[in-house]
Image (cartoon, rainbow, N blue to C red; front, side, top):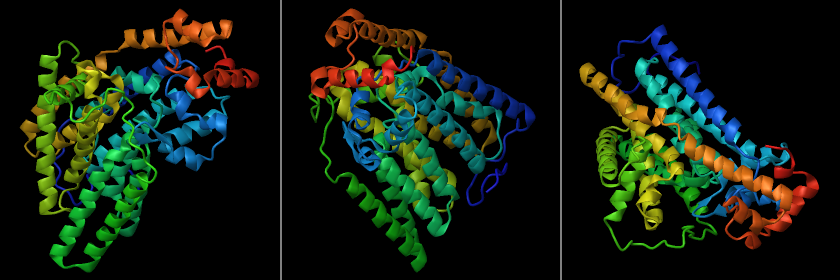
Amino acid sequence: MSLSSEPMPGRTAAPPAPGHGYASSILFGVTALALIFRFCWVVLKYAVNLFFYDEWNAYASLFERQPLWRVFVAQHGPHRQGLGVVVVTKLLYFAHWNSRVQAFTIASAMVLAMILATYLKIRAFGPISAWDIAIPVMFLGLGQWEALLGATGASPEAFPLLLIVAYCFAWIEGRGVIGNVAVLVIHFLLIFTGFGIFIAGITLLLFGLEAYHGAKTHARWRTRTPLLSLAIATASLASFFYGYQFNPSVACYHFPYHDPAAYPVFLGLMFANFLAVKQGVILASILGMGIIVVVSSLLVVHIRALWKDSSADRASMLIVILLGFSLTFSAATAVGRVCLGPEGGRASRYLTLLIPAFLGIYFSILAIRNHRKRVVLAGIFILLLLPSCVHQNHKEIEAFSALKQNWKQCYLAHEDIRFCDAEANFQLYPCPECIQMKEKLEFLKRNRLNLYSDSK
């Protein structure tokens, strides 16, 4: 399949906007390259070769020599490890367990997701335009630095983001049995990879709509294929729950929460944080809730479009996937983390899986056929995104990196976990004895791995 500058057939696209051509391509290319460079520079400068917090659990298979399929299905907190941890585990073997490899892998996954999202836009809406700088701005903001440099690992956010874009491709590019197989394979990878589990409901909805429209036309092949796919997708979801134990990962978890009003506030702060609105709680949460209303309204509109005809508008399918996933993820996050208080909604790591929602908003704008309205809304959208691009989060990034580096240097000098926790004012793991951290650090020393393998 070749890269086409024309929108794919079988959808109702907005006509191409003026500004296509070399100037728009150059603007997009310069913006994307600058943000990619900044993204990679942050990893190169601030990633520290030291297992931290959840990484001791995520990569326990390195010490225990587990087969990769066990790593894939292993549960960590509320989700399973899946593809991200498998890939990073394999790479760590070849890099003396240098945990900077994880940061570079996560950055690569996000950059690749941005490139694929750009290609997806070209296939669905036509050639690169000046407005498309919104895509690298959304995907490569440093507001999500915790997903890059923190302890979340590759599976919870970065790899689900990449797989979601690939999932969108499978739906709009696939044809017949091959297309359904591609969707089902990516669906399986997603539900086992971190918070990709929240794609499950979208898959069941889309196959259900296809079966419904097939039944309306009395075409057996249009009914049987999606019904079979629906059954396989359901079986994949059921396999996720085999041996699963619910683990919210926070001691304060309680549902329903004693203050129901805290849920929308938490959600609002999550979405406002994506736009780098960090001052105050009330105004930020109101702005965020406004975005949620927009996202929810667009989702309903495009589900209705698919209900009328599941194949008439592939743009609607993309928008439903993107908006539906992020809404489900954010709602589940609010349920699981609302007890941490309003500031919990501003966690940096949540931003990565809100990217699909904002990409869905952008695609909704591109689908508007009225040129003037489309241009005005695209301009407003980019203006709203710019603060998140300009905000570099360097203070937080530098402080976190310095704490890890100080702990590492302390331990290399003293080899005393509790002493270094106090000396560096930084806890590497809340309960070192629970995971035999001292024994693992001794193993790393004997084999010159991880923090003992280099000076970074």
